[in-house]
Length: 508
Image 1 (cartoon, rainbow, N blue to C red):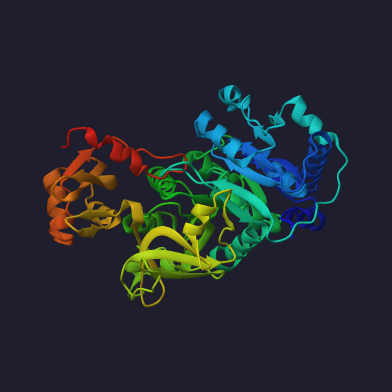
Image 2: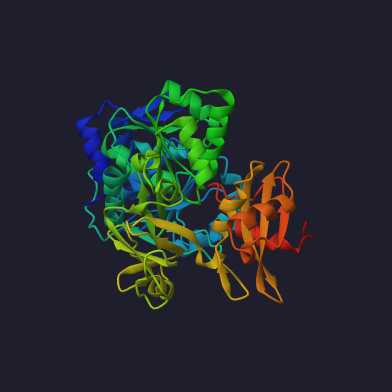
């Protein structure tokens, strides 16, 4: 079934419910949102002859038009190509060409930088900017019903970050995204029409995918005036809008918690904060729970199985009396209801409890494959199982603890060293705010451990002593780089590739 039917249903059942807000001001109700999506879809059909299956690219910072464009695309049977707004114009050009996008929507703040590369986008038939007369003219068509789509029809073409080469287009079908939404309801959180999801993280990524659960319940969608993540703004919105829900990377959670703690800010207006997209260290989530209470849920997923591999619900996060509570805080939880999760060796054989191997997953949320890339698809999808590239271990109760991405594992003297294990220990030092551990090529050992540390009143000998108290000597960093900040992408994920590239600098 076409995902656009979610909006059709919400508009019919609760047409007067507030749908889109800019800050705490209502921009449209569900009747208006559906009407605008339907008119946009019809205009694109009439003016550009767009057909079902054609790709519609969005290069937009978070914007009040984002939702109507998503649903307009599905309304006409098209495929959304959400593109990271922070990409270089040449990277955007590659995605537009690879996706063979027919139309592009770009926000006004990004349009000038993209203009030079758009002339070479051979497949593009038109480019529009929300808020301009040309865009407003698209709203003048007569609304029609959404076209029929099957569950296996492509809906969302998400391009991976490309840290190991050219980005690949992850094909997510209508069925994939329906299953992901079912997981939200069954595993993450209940939603009511009084709830509000705030898009503090990019709508082109996981935060935007959570729109479906809130459209299904005719809940509110809040675009911050800043269009991004600002702790003070979020606290203010939690008070003026109320029942605020959001998806955030762990680094965003840490910044929000620090703000609340430093300003004694009220938290009653926050309902649910789902975190994922990178490692959340046990120390940090303990602090978050102490400061903000039972408002957190952890999920683990990736573009190929969006938001849907495992979950650590708020009840388990708060269950400090459980004998395995600390171990579970360091885990990413257990399998979500729509998937199966295993840990396997290189041949695909299940590994014993506690032994690390590659995480594999299957189920309805798992992608259909990579766009126009059968070789990569065959490597990632084997016998129905998605090979995630993540290294983890399962305990006897099915809780998964991630070690690292397989490419981030450090092999020193023939022994595997998992950076996260070292990072957890270094974060025990009260002066360490952030840390990231990477491997550096070494003629004698193959690789050696290097730690990049952000903090105050921290010395290499003190960190050495801490490591020797908690982990084997061979896992101890051979050098420390004390830095002001760690490089991150626009989703708050630490860029270890950038850190590795900087290893030519003299060590401390």
